[in-house]
Length: 115
Length: 112
Image (cartoon, rainbow over all chains, first blue to last red; front, top):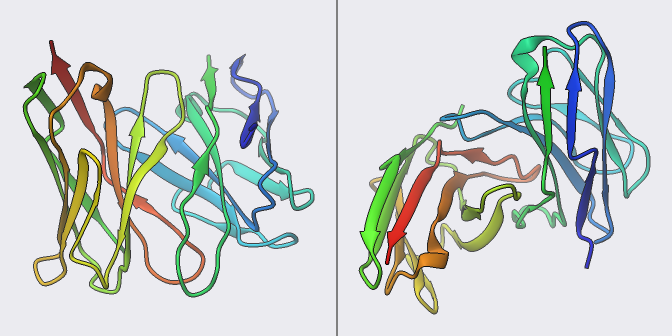
């Protein structure tokens, strides 16, 4: 019962360093998402992938890139980390059946600090 | 775009009492309203959801109500227990693509 697995769980970077956050799901879901969670602001969508081979910007995409490597994996890359990107990052997946929305399943997050 | 407001930001109740968390949304086209519970150090977990063709849904001690006219929906937890202590998020979504817009969250503390 792995569900959505995120690696690493914790990371500290220096300003300007790059990093890739990994996410994998074993539920055969079509759609995958990256969110960031900051105190008092709920979860904000960074990027999402409605299906393998497609990606789209969410609410806060600046400073990030994503890759939908295959149906299982969706990675988030910070090319030049900035202190404003200190946050907790969550990956999620869902089995969309248009036009209905389906529940999203979340991983346990990556806690990223940028000094 | 859609905006979801959630109140209160913190809520303390005695064990056994009921807790109510309210959310309002701005886009009348939204048709899916999930609630998530987030425990410390964990990701959000879906606890209940409701669609726009239903006014109320219950699952044991948890219920959600939806008022489409007023554009608000609420989470009701009865007979609260210490393990209900967590952060609760509401969200709203419309159409294919399943983009959820989240409220800012409510910290629920159940005192025993």
